[in-house]
Image (cartoon, rainbow, N blue to C red; front, side, top):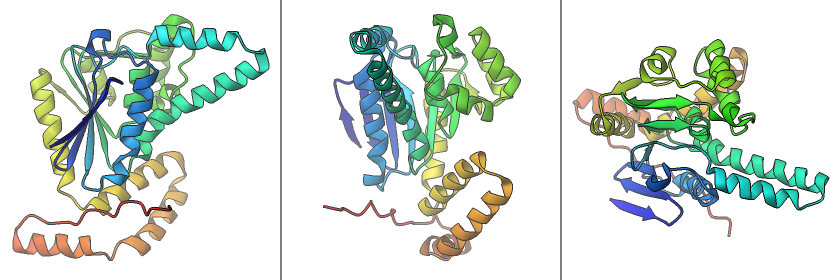
Length: 282
């Protein structure tokens, strides 16, 4: 096991083929101040450099998953913009929003599946975060809230763009307009979470088993599957069918396919090579 822990409030722990990205600012209910955003994105963007990683779990220390963006940091950021010439300040604010969006888009761009393991409160930016994940699981005491409407703003880091692709649009709109809490039973019925676990221990064990199952599959097939699912969500069926035909024409007849077929015939676990890390350009 290797670990990378920083004062930023983000721990990145690699356990074999599974990495755990832990929000670790429990005294603030994992409220995300600016260093957390930066470290969060950096951890995910490091995955291609660690080809032994086959799956990432996002989890949290303390009682709650996250209370969202740190409001003190948000206010300080806003006050800084107010001191600048208005047009330049607004352009800079837009650039800042885009950079924050990029932190969670890194979840989608991560080549391996990313799983959210939610306990306690998942508020505001937490919904932005988990909406970008491949799957979501939670404890029986978890709850979800699009908090932005309750503080007089429009959610701007991904919730309104991704959540309607996960749950019924009418429910997404209701949650976004009212800011009410969504509890586990309703979240499960709506498809926001795949399963509800009794407590944190059961959540950690259950999600860990799912991650290890993913890690046992062909890494190239898993990466291709994630690529296709993300592409299909944003394109027509015809475009997506054309893309997979080109992808498999290039990628299908590889070593992983032969290894899986041989392993199945011999009734043994398949043994796959790690993907290659990105080529160095320096």
